[in-house]
Image (cartoon, helix red, strand yellow):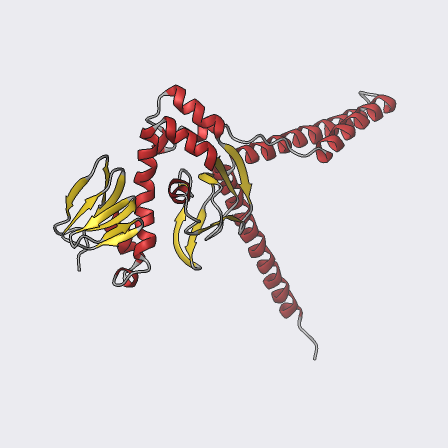
Length: 315
């Protein structure tokens, strides 16, 4: 059966519309990618933009030389020399990898909340101890039950935190990861995986111990971050907390309080629940307990240098 010319034109128009739609969709994806790249990795974006600008200028030079030759304003020999020079520069640009310098550690770390109150000397000392590390999408930064090798600060990108393959949280720029293991010297409590291309600043366990030994303010700030997370890990395995929504647990713990017993201290728990984060304690029935553990009692006696995280559980 013959196909009419109108039908053929309609089919062509539909194909063209489909192609145009795909081109526009790809263009949007490309622009979105570049915008995200600019926000997350500005130095890579700037490097690409600089190379593109150089390439555009070289192409413009080439067209100008060809136009001048065509008009007879420059001779063929001179034009060939100029074109050869332009092509060599173009080849050098294509063959040379872009120069991408890692972001300055100080510039990244000065935005981290728990480092802001350090004096300049202490801050610079800490900055010099951090090391850059990059991770691709899906690459594991920390493995659950793995050995303690240091503390990480997310400089760019986002990471997901999982425990027993269950998603616990998504963290971004400025987040501290691995602090629990460094502070308590226990195996890693969670797996942290790169959700996007990620840059982290790593502080080794040895360096971290030196830092907090010289600066107790920094140690206290890290414990303020670590205590709710450690409490969350403990509660996730205990009924009835394990049946709660993750968002409800986070909301409950966000109102908690961390207590440091610099000497033997009696704590009246009243309507609160406690999690012994570090050290030892004696419960009201004279039972001795060691951290980490949940304490649901009327009162408790903390040993010296113990840390107790208190929160209110609304049944």
